[in-house]
Length: 213
Image (cartoon, rainbow, N blue to C red; front, side):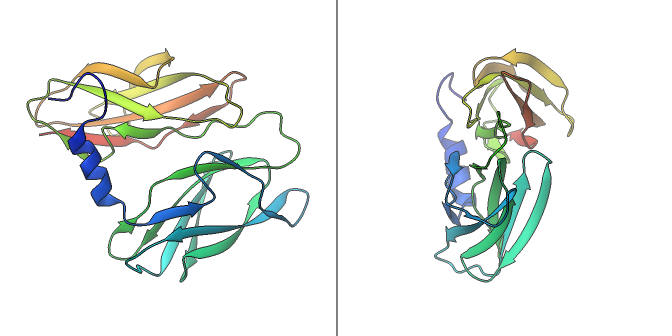
């Protein structure tokens, strides 16, 4: 059974098994000022990661959280220089050959002219996406994490259900978890989080999934 508090240990073990590339820089949930300024609106940043198994070539998956555009950048080494828009929040992760991947990290590329930044998309803490929880579970606790460089997140909307595009389950949630959601053995569930800040900025997470049994 999933416990009423904390993160399911089986879920954590699943996550560890799937992550085999370690991101190094830019750091997670950071305000990055280290870029080389190339214009009033752009700067160049060197992305770095480590991989003991040498799963080269690598693909950096870089998403502009303001425009939701994702670019794929290939590298044969464990680093690559990328030109970014200034004053914009990004998410990134790295994949290599043989089904290797990293965690997803977020950062804010510091720049002029913005009074507020969009919150980083929420990430699933428990259950992690793709996990299978005990078939004897009748409820699940959904736990997530979300950050904002401005530190002005005010609430979350939860979408949850059996459809791959889940329906709205709860609005204006002020905690980063919802407990005791009913589930049934043998079913697959999908969920996502919309994070909202104090001036109306919103970010939408990816759609997470888990199965029961």
